Image (cartoon, rainbow, N blue to C red; front, top):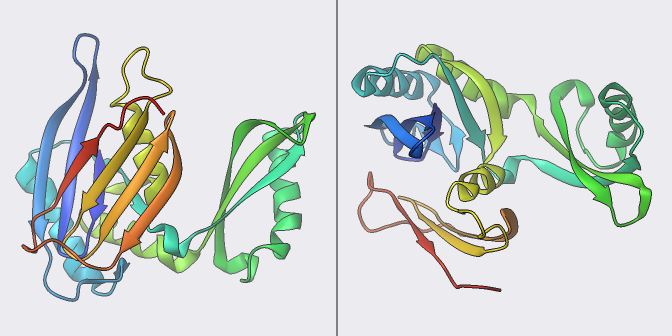
Length: 227
C-alpha cells in the first residue's frame, strides 16, 4: 500500500500483483486535509494528518497495515559514490559513514542514512556506483508518527523522485525498456515534471503553483516516442 501525504489531501492506494493483469488497484481513498496541516511538503499538524490517514484507511476498506510513503527530494541529500565492488553491505555502510562527513552538513546522530548499489562504475571495472541518501531524522519521524496515528506501520520511506522511477517501470511493457517518458504531476500547490529514460530519472522540474481546483490532483503520462 502506498500513501501520499500532499498539501491538501492524503491519497491511499493498495496494489496487488496478478499473473494475468500484472498490477491492479485493490483499494483507493482520498481524504482532505485542513488548511495548514502540510506546509511546503512538511507536516505542520501531526494530529490532523494522522486523523486523515485513519479516515482514508477506513474508507478504503483495506486490511493492509504496512505502507510505503515518501519525502520530498528537497529535504534529502543524495550523492553517487564509487566504491570497491567487492565490499559487503556492512563494509559499504561503514565506509559511507566515514565519508558522509564530507557531504552531509548535519551531525550523523541527527540524520537517517541509506544507500543502494546502482551497478558497475564508469570509473573502473573494480568499482561500483553507490547512491547515498540522507535526511534529517525529523523529516522521516514526522511521517512515521503520522502513519502510526492512522493505524499504519511505515515499512518504506522513499524519496519522491525515486518513487516516480519505480512507478514508471509499471508503464513499460516488454520491448519498451529504453523508452522515454515524461510524467506531469499536477498538484494543488505544486506542479512537477519528471523525465525518465529507461526507467531512470534524467530531469525533474518543479514549480510552486498548483491546479485551479484545490483538493483535485491528476497525473498525465506523455510519450515522446524513441529518444
